[in-house]
Length: 380
Image 1 (cartoon, helix red, strand yellow):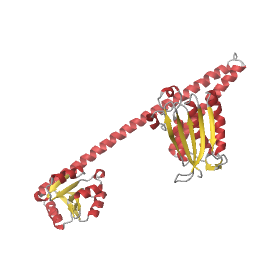
Image 2 (cartoon, helix red, strand yellow):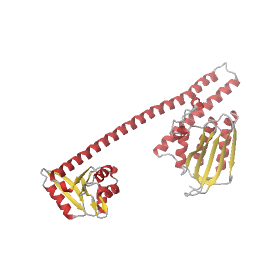
Image 3 (spheres, helix red, strand yellow):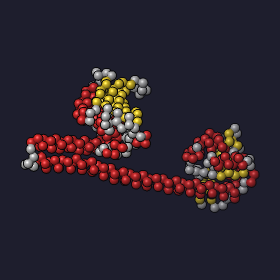
Image 4 (cartoon, one colour):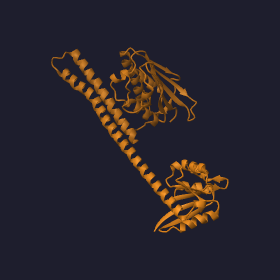
C-alpha cells in the first residue's frame, strides 16, 4: 500500500482530527499525518520539505495561511501546499494561488473524496512541474555545453591563427636570411624580424599556459618585498620603443617612489606590460599615462592603485561588458584591423585577483580613450 506523508498545519486540534478522519476513510493508500499547531514550527517544517503534501489552515491565531505561504518562499519549494479555509472568499483563494498554493479547499464542503482528489492532483501537478524544471535544466546544460564547445573551437582556431602568422614570418625571413644573395644589412633586418616574431610567439604561449594554470589553480605566486617604482621603470623602458614608433608620449607619475610592498613583482610587471601594450596598440595619437598612488579608504586595508590611461579609440558600453572575457577584443572600427587574441586583459584580471587585488575598467569613451585601474594590497 502506498504511503503519503502529510503535515497538517492547524491551531485547532478538533479541525485537525476531522481532516485526519477524512484521510483514514480513503482506501488504497495510507496517509501518515503529523499535526503542527504552531506558526513558526509550521514554517520550519515546510521549508525542510520532508512531507509529500502540506495542508495549511487559513486561520492560525494572529497569523493566516497566507502568512505561512509568504514566510516559506513558495517558488523555492517542490512539495505542494493546499490551503484549507472556512471562509468562502474568492479573493483569499486567488491570493493563495498567486502565492504558490497548489489548491484550496472549503471546510464546510470538505469530504474524503474531495480531499483525496485535491491531494492526488496537487502531487501530480508538483511532479509535472519538477519534470518540466528538470527538462529546462537539461536544455540549459545542453546549450551551455554547445556554447562551451563552440567557444573551444573558436579558441583553438584563434590560437592557430595567431601562431601561424608569426611562424610564417619566421620561416620566410629565415629563408631570406640564409640566402647567399642577401647582403649583411638585409640579413640583420631579417634576423631582427625573426627575433621579434619569436618573442611574440613566446609571449602568446606564456599567456595561454598562465591562463590554463590559473583555471586549474596551479599558478605560482612568489611574494617578496620590493619597490613598485622599479617595476614601473622596467615597463617604461620596455614599452618606450613601441610608443615612440607611433609618436606617442609615455608618462609615469608616482606618488611615493620609495614605497615598498609585499607581492609578486614578476606578475605585477606582466599585468602592466599587458595594460600598457594594449593602450599603445589601440592609441593612434596622444599619450599613455601610468599613475601610481596609495588608496587608504578601502575597508580591506591600504591598496596600491596603478592607473593606466590612454587617448585611444575607446570602446562602446556593449564592448565594455565583455572586455575581460578571452577573445572578446571588440569590433569597433580600428579594433577589427588590429591583430590580437584578447587574452591579455582576461589574464591580467585573473592575476590581479590571485594577488588579492582587482583590475577594473574605470572609464572609456569612443574616440576619447580608456582608463584601467589595478588595485593591489600594500601588504600580502
